[in-house]
Length: 397
Image (tube, rainbow, N blue to C red):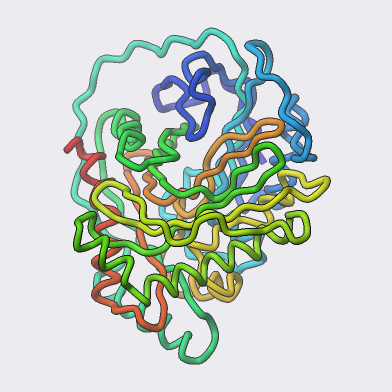
């Protein structure tokens, strides 16, 4: 476990605090007070470590039913919280995944912010931004073969659905933070923002809520089902029996996850298979809500909801076991959680549509849910369509 103080530790340039889901009125007036970074090799329970660290710095989240304190301009504002897919798999009891392609990234980062005057960034001459060609972690043929392997597992009854994710890397020169910051402006990026650390940075353009807690209410918004954002694409998505079955399977999984930490009988679906737009894609989203169980703390909430069901599959543990066997590299910054926490408030996005920089390499990830009716060629094309806006934005187009 590493505790990293804020002064002078970041090798990447400082930016105005722009953490996904951070209080909009405070983003320009926050200073970092304390930081916890953790990796799987450090041992221990990342959910418990996060809750303990926050409490030690004046942000108790051991009882999420307590009303939020009045927001003041003094003292701690809240904290950024990032949890990797690998850390979520550990919480779920899944086997270790393939080696991480971006080893500088932590598996847990908790950054506590105070209100105060922002420190001016050290003046640096502008450096030309260059992003090289992308190298995929698997070929289209290997991706398609993995889809067939999932379909075979479904046929055997091992799983009902598994989400497969591919990775790509590109060398860069220059400052990666402006490129990563641009992701937050993409249309539909509900969790747009950046988080930086010592030699690493994450940029997020996610539309998906992993879990939100406000006023004693739990909310998750799983997304499953994708088509081009055209009139024909919308009609095709709404009419697709395959996409609807895949979606409802994940909604049921999310209902079960929330039921573990909700008041008995309070889980309900507010909206089912609503079509929303992200960049040039239509996606199907549902809203599941529940009342927070008495005494629920952040650690138990993370154990119940991580990793998100829409990026694992069902049953979750069986899908994670298959993912660890099929995906050639780890999921890094993607398919985890990133957002803002404070007493009485949790708002974590699922890190789909996410990129990360470490050293001189930029990383992206994309994938989709595989069911018995999946067509391997179509799944490969869908993953490419999801990552295309991310790569174009990073390149400055």
